Length: 132
Image (tube, rainbow, N blue to C red; front, side):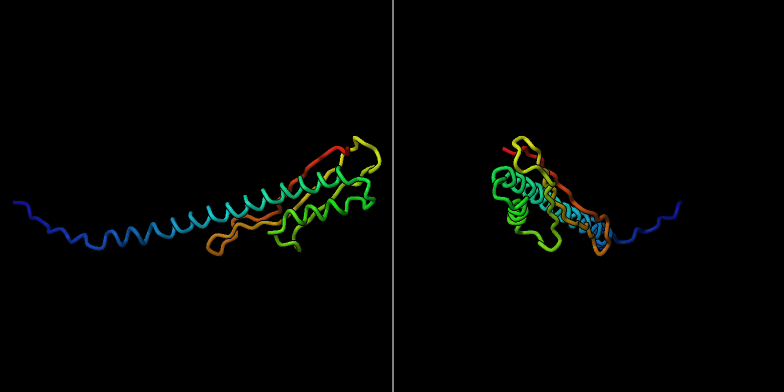
């Protein structure tokens, strides 16, 4: 007659499985949150570039050579760190209608998950408009 081995209790199995899966789930949730922040920053600088370009083409006779466009872009991105925000306006012939003005807005990003930098770089958005 074969010998039967008594099975051990499976109490605690769920706790072990949770201990194995929980760090992965936490990292996944943090990654989703970080990507959401980066996406929000990208949308903000895209809107800032659009606002700056619109200001440049509408107020071309002010004579400030794009300074009002830079101010408009910075004001549009008010929730970002202004010391890290880069705004450039292309040199243009401000007196000729139809000339293209290019506004470029840059902002650094870093995706950190549980202390590890997964990726970092610079977000860039460029908008071109023709002077009216």
